[in-house]
Length: 145
Ligand SMILES: [Fe+2]
Ligand SMILES: [Fe+2]
Image (cartoon, rainbow, N blue to C red):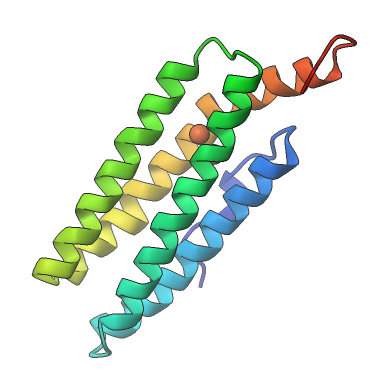
């Protein structure tokens, strides 16, 4: 059973963003399997390893978006970047809480309630606006993207 419904995530006009979003979903699904096993008595280590992979990929995903926003002088760059920074800090804090306190129920609710709701909303708003702007710039005759 999927933990995140991929049909909720719209396709954007920039391929690299779609593949980053698909990878984010895949990593969350892996985390769901590991966390489910842990809640049934399995080890915490696989959860910790997958949390680290998610943290790395989320940083790379956000950095790629921030790079194209800077390259195209996207006007709402500071707002979009601030939202990325906020989520990275929150994700790091929840991972640290789990490492130190080991509360799988709290981590579960963060990863499969808070994160998916944020993720879908973020893609539909900030990522969507960014992708449309960047794709339009790339299609323009004078574009340097
Ligand atoms: Fe994104
Ligand atoms: Fe974004």
